[in-house]
Image: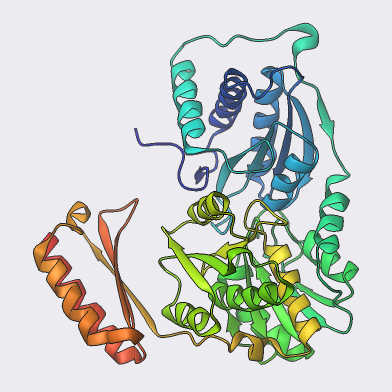
Length: 452
């Protein structure tokens, strides 16, 4: 049996892979592991539990709440709120644990469980491993130690979470958004109420899409993975910009007033310049993954800003930021972390900060995003190969070296073994898309012959 926890919690098809029994068992295991680690010492433990609007979240939330309360943890149910809201409330309320039920940008049948430690930070790998080990031991018959009487957890509906979180978002903005018209696509997800309310309180005129969740329509043809409706709406309404979230609103992509996409790399570049100008870009550095566009790196170099790259995954970006005290990081997909104000990617905060930069400068978003030119990027997946030999194949090493010489300073090659499938991802960037495609296809052929 494979590891339950992936890079972003436990995910699967709800009621098939992710069952009520699994959700309950993991929650009880989490309570016991944190108790053994001393997290609850000297006080009665408290957990914050939230979810996105998926229909399956209703029964999974009930299972998680039951598991925590049965293990002696008091539960604050905050209802449908974004993942970063649950992280924020876990920290601001002094809770010992946060639990979010969401499968992010995945289709509606999926769902997931993500745990946050005290302070609203993602749980360490080591604690996730211990939770999984404890869950497996008890699911095979080992009895739990169960509190009784007044020792069982109490469950409270915490309605103030929405207003507290929105007030936090508006309160950290460097300036108001008065005079801006913004279209918001909430993906029929967790930000369907939060994002429009936050933008309106900050002074923007708001037009909404994807803000009528019914439990079944999350991410369905809308949100950050489907920008077509947002592009059209921004142009139709003559808006200054549009922002799109995913199902749990930990990411944000944008659209300028001409309907052009502004991706995570461009958002990071715009925010980096604004934060440097304000004196809050600590160590003059931005953190991004190896998949960030080469144009992003070249733009930062031109502006005199340092770039640190990590493995793919926002958790690795966050780890690097926390380890070295950096203030800004993120991914091309729109996970942007502003560490002074959030402990995880926050799509609503990102959109607000981007709009604030437009308002403060009086410049269109397209012009601000023009600080970087996205170089053509070709990605080829090569299946059914031995991904473990990517770094040790002499034939592959020589082919990559030849490609890098051909591309020079305005091109880049990245060969990355998939973490979940028997395939190798070949990514090539170049100033010319035809050159990028030719080099990528040539390298894919070498991968097949060398590792097949």
